[in-house]
Amino acid sequence: MTRLTSNSIELPGVLEAIETYFENGWSDGLPVVPPTPEAVTATLEAANLRPDAILGIEPVKGAVITAEKAAINAIMAGCKPEYMPVVVAAIGAITQPEFNLHGITVSTMGAAILLVVNGPITEELGINSKTSAFGPGYRANATIGRAIRLLIINVLGTRTDDGLDKATLGHPGKYSWCIAENEDDLPYGWTPMHVTRGVEEGKSAVTVFPGLSATQFGEHEANTPEGILDAFAQRLYPLGPGLDEVAIIISPEHAAYLEKARWQKEQVGNYLFENARKTASEWTAMGLQSGAQQENNTKLDAIERDRPISVLSSPESAIPIVVGGAGGGWSAVIPTWSNGSRAKIVTRAINLSK
Image (cartoon, rainbow, N blue to C red; front, side, top):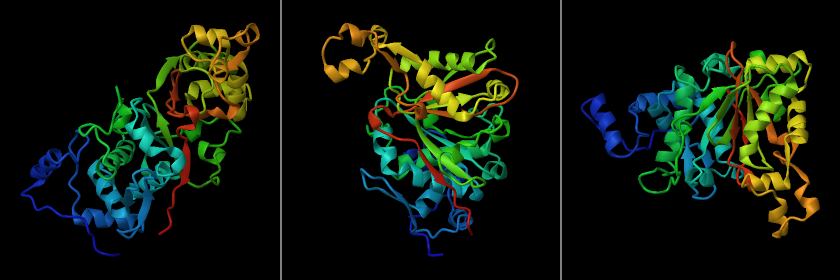
């Protein structure tokens, strides 16, 4: 293990350290944990990393994220050392060119980075996938997600006070947004999301989404897959046609109806692609471009007006994820900053080798 190279600051105590981080703009607006050299070394050792190991390079700015800088920001966020492998995998994912990290972090649309963790590590670290998974109360969820935001602020230099973060509204996920998929309540025959996306079963992985604000809804009457997915469709329509990728957050209660009807995972996307449709004229009446207008740049003729256009660009555009606790038919959709192939969801395996 080589020596640490980051500058150190001698301060009288913890409170002074916290205030110094506020004064220098190294915080997300909340107090941080002072990253002592001992804590940084322990965090690096937990992931078997040298301080100068390069974990990722932001493709547009060329900013380099080293293991030492990642460990510092993970500690500041409140992470335990054993959380570091998840942070490392997330960094590898968000710095892939197809994720378009720079565009996501400076866009006026205000997307945040949602981490969804799968595999045995979710139990080992206590990453919440069940009751109030998107809410507070679980250290792993809160601090792993926050570590990624602090890296964006402190290593990539993207913050609101210097004008680089141009989000018109933003949303709370820009503080911290990390959950696990509820693999215990997957319908029979469904593979976990990371396995569907190519990671070996039994391994752990993190998937990163360029997520916009979630839309939660209740569906307490429908007890068939079709009825439940029709309720999802109603929340997808305002997003417009041809969505490239959207997270379909399915509560355990709704998942149980899919299991009862023996629906397989791919049927969710197939149903929404085939049935969540409006005609070009209906999309236009909603104030949304139908695609036909964009292609032709002319008034729609009679045939084009009546052509049904799906809310999804393909069946694979729907990403089903089972999340949440029992006892309530509340699900959600999370659109992504993805139309026009501007950004893509990325999955990376978590390396736990020592």
